[in-house]
Length: 438
Image (cartoon, rainbow, N blue to C red; front, side):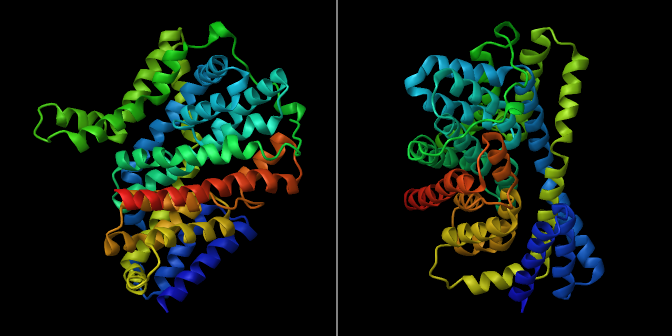
């Protein structure tokens, strides 16, 4: 019966979001209330559970996502994102243009939300394709594969960060393992796949071709742009490496661990960006702070959706559903990593949103992490891979790609959907390989 209630809850979640277009945060709260009441929780305990779920989820996450949005906005508004793109293209040359765009998508995608990175970089893709006379999809898909992988796999993006917190996974290790898995996923879904679809012609709509393009003297240098964009990754990676190889009694270990904690690393990166990309480029502090303030409005709903998923997760735990599911799955011969990936895939197909699919799947399989002893970091990546699978007409990213590249629905399914599915499949294969090594 508890499992049936959860399944009904997921159906309600799907119907309200996909059919009635109800806001995901409101839907999560409604489903949380339904599951709690159906499981026999008292109303007082149910409200407390929802409040605790929201508070525990956002308590740490709000700093990371908030600082991440600020950093992404500063990188975009200063022209650093454009500098990275044009600089890498210039260094690599036309022959290796795809690899330049892969690196661009990866570097810019780490501090930026997917939709922001897409809108900022796609006009540059259009310009490169027009200048080099190369097919638009041949140029664009490697970049989008990188953006998609960073969105689904890597902290500080919303879903992988929130799921890491749910599973008590080490963010540094999740980032490290995620980068290892990301490399083959990007290569297969980007440069390799894009060479198989030469018969599909994409032409950008005119209204998408001419957004703001910075002049050379308006942009920061290449070195400054890359250092600022990747600074939080450097700090987190340094702390993770030190944790693995240094004795914790080493005198500098506490300082390194502090600087490499995700929230502090993001704060440091934002402060450096304010100086290097703002004040250091003769912008007034008021202008820089306005840019930062506007960045937060873009993540408000993302935070609420994650909070709603946290509420549902807590209700599943407090009502005993998680324990019941753990008992059912405890004797299963199926790998918990494959199970988590499959559940995330099913939810992705039903709901559309990768973030909603990932967070909902995490709440369902949460007990497997402690019950099976599986690596929580790999569970985060398994869910991230599943959450990118089989994107179709109920996914906003599907339509964003379709409209910007001026494709039919059929050709969008042949390109975008296949690219996302390739990322998801290579991702779970990489997770399973890593599971045999670590």
